Length: 125
Image (tube, rainbow, N blue to C red; front, side, top):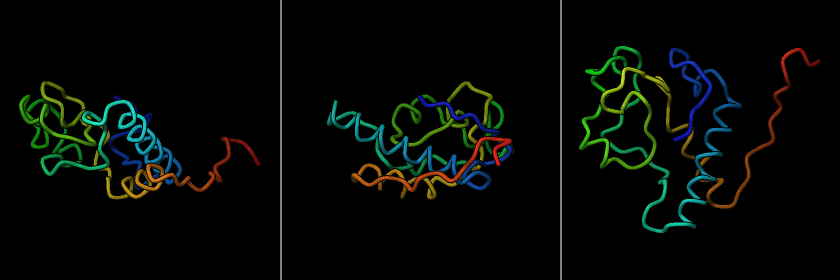
């Protein structure tokens, strides 16, 4: 499990290019490491067709439309969020666009790097 410090109400794939790059790169690196250690059980660079990333109307609450049941949750592979976990009320990471993460993750998994960040700490000039 990887926790991302962001707000579900502001999907980071729309609001923060640097965080999007960082999360995509982390996903790619985790894919490589888990596959190296266990060729059968690794983190794939996919999003299962059952998994939809929605806003609060689709993800918030235990009976949210995006929420998977226990059997579904155990069977899906790839990227999921709290909004998919059964018996949960959280809806993070929100309505992210996984299609913005997948190419970054694939690039890292294929041995490529990610362009260096141009972000500066708050208050830096």
